Length: 261
Length: 261
Image (cartoon, rainbow over all chains, first blue to last red):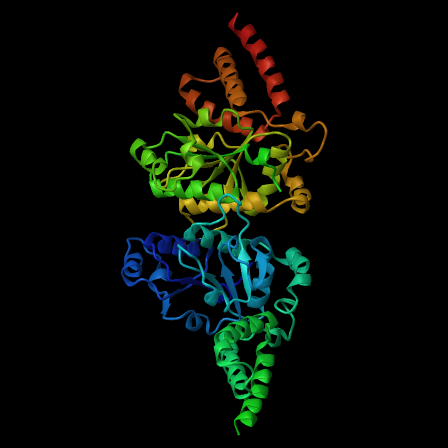
C-alpha cells in the first residue's frame, strides 16, 4: 500500500466550498483513509471558520493550507486531477474512470511526485478555467438518473479507491493508456527523472511561451485569452517531465530574448 | 456490471438512524450508484419524517420500507452483510475487507439471491444481537487513527465498491475463500439451487431447533438466550442453501414431534 510519505504527497484541494458540514465531512474522509494534506482555495470565510471550529473537527482541517488562487494551491503538484460531473460538459482533458485511476496516481507518488485531487464548489463544480490546470479528469461511475455526488461522499469514494485499490495487477493493465503520465515503473532507479513537472514550472513555461507568442505577433490581441487557455491544456496533455519542462523553458527564453531584441 | 434486476435485490438497511442529513446522504449515494432499495428499521420518527420531507429528497427515500425489527427487514435476504468499526469488538463472524466483497455479493445476486448491507446507528453501530443476523462482516480499510466513518460516506464507499468493482477477474480470486457462501459460478444452470436460504427460513429453522433443544432438555433455562445467539451465528456460518435449510427444517420438525410425544 501507499507509504506515509506518499500519502503526504497527495493533496485534497477544495475550491470555494460553501457548506461547513461538507468541509467537515471531506476532512473526516481524509482522516479515515489516512491522507493528511488539505488545501482550501478562496473559501467563504464565515463557513470556513465554522467548519474549522466545529466540535470534533479533524486536526488536518485545523492545519489546512489556505490560498487565494487554485494556481497557488497547485504550485508544487506534478499530477493534477479534476473531479466533477461530466454530463453537461464536453471535457477538454483525458477522462479516467475512478476504478482506473489508482495506478496512475501511485506511479507518480512512487517516483516522488505530488498529486492533487481537486473538488469544485457544491453548486456548480469546477469551472473551465479551474479544469485547465488539470492533467486528467476523474469520473466517478454514477447513475445517469442522479450523477451528481455530495462533496463529502465524493471525497470519501475517491480516497477509498486511492488508498485501497489498484496496485501491482492493475498497474500493467492501465499502463498502455497512461502513456506519458505514468509510463515509468514504480521502482525504476531513474524514477525521479520521469517525475512530472510541477504546476508552477508549467505556469512559468506557459508565461514565457505566451510572451513569445505576443513578441512574434502570433495572433491578434483578442485571441490572447483563448490562446492562454489552450496553451495550459496543451502543456497538461504533453505532461512533460520536470527535466523536459526546464529544457523547453530554456529554449523559449532564448527565443523570447531574440524576438525582443 | 450488475443488471437492474440484481441492483433491485441489494437492500440497504439503516438500523435506527438518528441524523436526517445522514439519512438523506445515504439515499443520495444509493441514487448515485443506482441501488433503489432502502429499508429503515425502528427510526426515530421526527428525524425520519424530516429526512423524507426534505427538499430534493430522493424518490427511493420517500418510498423506503419501514420495519419495527431487523429480523423483519431481512426476512427475504439470503446474504446479510454487517458493517461497522471492528476496533473495539472481537467479531463473531467472518470478516471480509470491502475490496474483496464484490465477488461474493455479485455471485449471490447472479444466482437470484437477495443481499442486504446493514448499517447501525451513528453513535454506537450495530449491536451484538444485530450482528448475529449477518453472514459476514464488512470492514472498510480505514486509518487506525480515525477508523469510524460517517454513515453517509460509509454507504457511498460500499455502494461504489459493489457497483463498480470486482467482476470476472476478481471472482476466481475470491472463490477459494468464499467456500459455502459463494461457491457457484455466476452462470451455472443450477444456480438457483445454490442460492442461500432467506433469513426468515433460517429464523424458522432456528426456532424449531431451539424447541427441540428445550424438549430434549439440552441445557438449563438460564442458558437459553446464549444458546439462541450461538445458534443464529452457527446457521449463518453454515450458510445452507435454501433447499438444504428446508431439509434440515423437516428433520428437526420430525425430531421435535418425537420429543414432544
